[in-house]
Amino acid sequence: MIHQAYRLGYRSLTLVGISGFIIGLVLTLQARPTMVEFGAEFYIPTMVTISIVREIGPVLTAMICAGKLGSGIGAELSSMKVSEQLDAMDVSGVNAFNYTVVTRVLATTLMVPLLVFYADAIGLLGSYFAVNLEGEMTLKLFFQKVIGSIGYADIIPATAKSILFGFAIGIVGCYKGYTAEGGTVGVGQAANSSVVAASFLIFIIDMIAVQLTQLII
Image 1 (cartoon, rainbow, N blue to C red):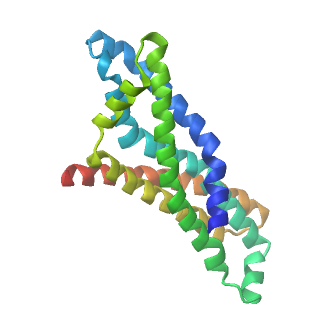
Image 2: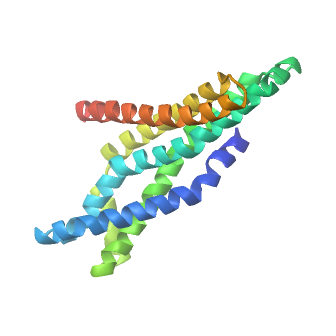
Image 3: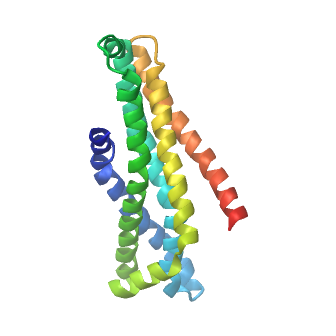
């Protein structure tokens, strides 16, 4: 599981970090003219923080992971399936399901929330740079407003659905790979369908999570 966490999580840091930084930068630059028009320029860090922490960070990171991790898991397991490596594990006394599926699902469930936290932090850093492109705000003041604008009601639901996103990506990728058929053609189909199904499931989970959060909070 640790090996899978390294492969699926650590090696995604660069992609997630660059994407998070750009999103924070662009979101701030796009929001700034409207905020300035209403005289609310000082509240840009608050708006960006709530947007990233509650919704953009978890969903964006999950979609990136669905494309990178979901397709990788689907392709890898389907390749092992069509080349009969999974059958060879069972014959040699190794539980192929535990070795290939459980470890990957646990790894994605653990790493996706951590990647979300990482993307949120990098995204807020990108927002800080965007704020200072046309204005001036110290790093201390920016992050004071960031910390003051969020609470447990923002962090806990975002973390919970990030865990579900990771679990869904792992389950879908493993299922598509483990049930692949049709030789090498099935490998491509498994990788493609893993991304599509995981992305669709992420939106469904997000919709349900938002509704539950509104009811609870």
